[in-house]
Amino acid sequence: MSLLDDLQWRYATKKMNGATVPKEKLDYILEAARMAPSSSGLQQYKVIVISDKALLEKIQALAYNQSQITDCSHLLVFVAWDGYTEERVSEVFNHMMDERGLPHSTMNDYKNTILNLYGPLGKEWQAHHAAKQSYISFGLAIAAAAEQKVDATPIEGFLPDKLDELLQLKGTGYKSTVLLPLGYRESENDWLVNMKKVRTPKEAFVTEMTLADAASLNELPAMGSLDNFAQK
Ligand SMILES: Cc1cc2nc3c(=O)[nH]c(=O)nc-3n(C[C@H](O)[C@H](O)[C@H](O)COP(=O)(O)O)c2cc1C
Image (cartoon, protein in one colour):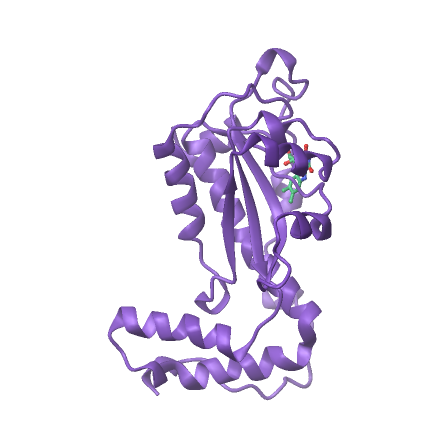
């Protein structure tokens, strides 16, 4: 099976049967999520795994009572930074330099560039930026689940502030962004299982452009270069 076959197989499962996803498959999906690229490699997000049925019932009440929340095997809750701080960004870069056997100062210029760029944009922008990164990880988890023949339902239909309260995220520096219940489809009771997968036609989805199609910007902004930061 190719990735495209797996993506055809998967769908946003509406009814799950409560069967358990084996640990190896769960670990595989989580590893795909962990390996996702992120802006500046900051990995501004993490994943909370919940299989406790009592807790899942509480979460379901905050997620428009969607049945997949309690009929899944494991619920992945993606959570992302609520903002960028010097301390957090330094911690990530210090870890990266330690792993690469380089002095902590190696990426200082780059780190300061990030902090100077993001700082003035405010916490709301920063939390949004971090949340966007978590969706890349979420997307890879969806693809990995499909490869493992594990069903997954992307879920944005929940009350994030309430969920943050329930999971005691307030004060941890993380906010919930998106949910991914993992489990197995209950085909006989799922209205979506045999529906045709519908997407924007390729011709409308993909646009090729050349310089002739582009606007002529008279003034280009003065920009520094991001090249070779690591050598400084
Ligand atoms: C970010 C995101 C949030 C979504 N939220 C929900 C949701 O709360 N409940 C649900 O049943 N489906 C949800 N979906 C599923 C989409 O409706 C579904 O992926 C889309 O219609 C395409 O269908 P397919 O995934 O079956 O191919 C969500 C999908 C994404 C990507």
